[in-house]
Image (cartoon, rainbow, N blue to C red):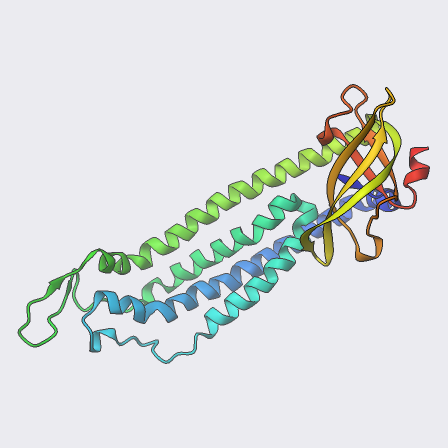
Length: 282
């Protein structure tokens, strides 16, 4: 965390183990559901794209007939719509578990995983080609025409497309794990700074919107000024998510913890906001 609200810090510390376990459990459940929804979308994609694939690998006419023609793509529509909606909820719930970067990427990982699974499950349902490697003659007696590159790509699509999404999912998994690890290290560093750093009073000088909102909480960029032990005025800029009912404003009191040996290092500065900030710094 880059910001600490003194109003809730004590209560959060007491309840942190149980709340963390609860967030992990909710994140896991939502993640599984999110995978399932995008698996529906992946399976539904096969139903909707089967005819398009036949148009590339078969001769025009009966060769373009798919058993999914005229089928309403309900699986695809439901999977994409509900999957997109649940993705926002998944990001909001997992923010405290994985950090902002990890929570933002988590729905991409679960989505890619679901699509790969759905496409793999649909593999035996693809309509086979009329003739391997060639288009049959348009008229009786016409010689077959060898497939071009596009036809070969479409023919092997049932194989390479789920593999592509599987690889994307693996890469995203690694990135999410690294991001979550970085967020935990940052939280530990900030907690140590509050314990070992020098505490002084500060004042909010500027608050700017970032245009990002997570779980109904706008993410704001704010600047706080404070004076170090040498009497030098310094400014530190942070970002944080705030309840609409408790948005910081210029002139609000703040409390700042910093390393007295390196007061200019913004990454080692922790800022607390709220009505108890002035008292906490005194």
